[in-house]
Length: 113
Image (cartoon, rainbow, N blue to C red):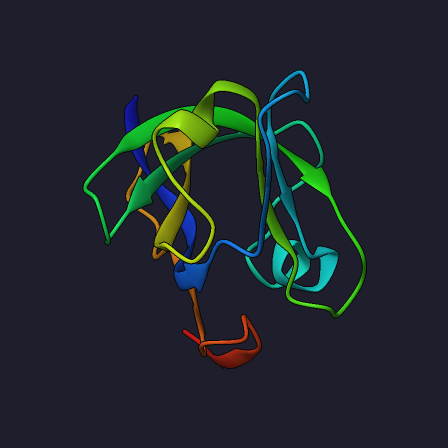
């Protein structure tokens, strides 16, 4: 088996942060659905702005508002307004083609590949 990219949300913007929350990343459920993410799924979060990267799990936010909120210690690495790529992976026997969700500066879906 190999680990391969399952899906990603490309170039989204951090809209909120909360240092004192227990952890995770909160994502607009519309984006989660487009990227085939489920609540509590593990993701890799990478900042295009700072280069920081970390792993966490997904929680759903408010449907259709473009909400991307980082919680807990990750807010020490990545700040509000930074541009992210959020990636999920999967173990497979055969390669698959990942889903790529490209968003605009307001985290609205421009294209799903």
